[in-house]
Image (spheres, each protein chain N blue to C red):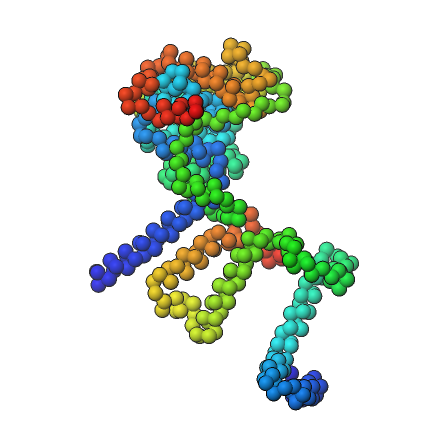
Length: 164
Length: 334
């Protein structure tokens, strides 16, 4: 958000008024939220939503199907599908979701190493004791062998265009 | 410097060792257990140089000959060493593998595989059944190359079947983990008995149809290698064909008979013995291609009488210290 934009003209008074109206002990939370909006999070969120929305048209068999999906997003309110196992029927079974979660945690840890310690993974591992180093290598090696997407049953282009 | 190099060498050796052990254990768990898994794993558990008669071939062999019945009736120490849909060049590989551990006096080869070209590409299952459980050996890699014709990822996945069956990780059960540590002795000595009775009508119309059949050159090549290997190891070779209501006809039997006569090899075609063996077409077949237990007992009985009457085979029931066939028989009778 730029200082000389219309957005800022609206944004700034709202932030100041609410800041002054809030109790002192939670004012810093409001400042934090406002800062996130002021910097890039707002644009990131908008971009993410727009891309996700565009994917509906990309993946749907026809434009009318796409509109049907969009209609259902707002008309079929069914939050219980988050809990009744329906999510596991969409292509990833429960055990595969577990692998996904573990893999995301590993990715997060690698990112932490990179951005908090400012180190590449190999440098970081090189500084650790042999048991940790080997343990990580062995676990990653076998996770790649077992969960990797390769072999006769897979086609890289299918993966790219997510025909799953 | 040398000390440091040695230290690194030991360190990386241990790492490689750990990876290999985990890899092979995972592979054993993840690769499905085929009918040939128990046969091949069980074969490696046999005491060395203990088998007198080795039966070889496809499922037609191991669904027909019951070594425990052979032992009970005739004291013959035999093992069914084969895999489903096995081609003759894979039978040759199995024979080579068997001779690393055993010195059989007789090898009896079931001939179904001679009805098709040995080097035509077999269906994937047949290759997996044949290769997945054999130990690593140059012979295995060469036969694999003969079958696949190139070295690529697929070839590699036969050497390391974990790469093919990795997706089974989510289906692993307690049995898969237990199998790792379990006793892999095959107390049926390779026999696969089924009590199922087919509901299809079994008849030998197809067998009686004549056709223009000639042995494929690839099969002749594989058979000659088998004959040569047996001859070099002083093993008597014999052929037989199990009773089957499909995929085999009298012209094929005739071609095998002509071929076997050229090398002075006995060939028994059990399709000609249906009445003599009193095979009941309504009760003795599991499906059109295979016998069930009761059918197998009848053919095995005949095979036992033939082997003990025509070959010098020791009666292993007289072994002073007992043997694994005694254990198998005791378990069968329990």
